[in-house]
Image 1 (tube, rainbow, N blue to C red):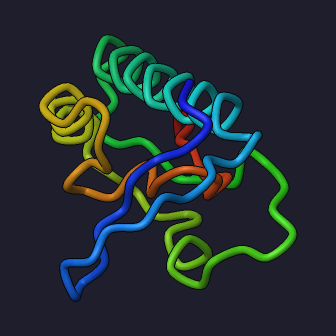
Image 2: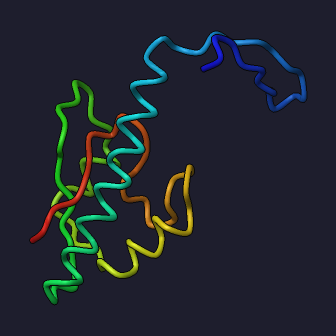
Length: 109
């Protein structure tokens, strides 16, 4: 992975910033969770379940309020699976999982 990245400010000016040393772990955890969520959705669908439930899968010292609000929410398994497949490498449109280090995942209800 790169140790530095170029960032463009709103003003149009570019700067060089150091990439955090935790970036490889953050990337790996996030991608694992996305694939795990796809697997949970597939299992739910194969078992005739229509929904999956959001839960906190990893401890977070300072949870984001928007992440906390999603805990316990139900999501349609087929829609979430389609969303995860259609949006590789970016935050899914449905916001589940909500992004790196959120600590949220899904489970069967």
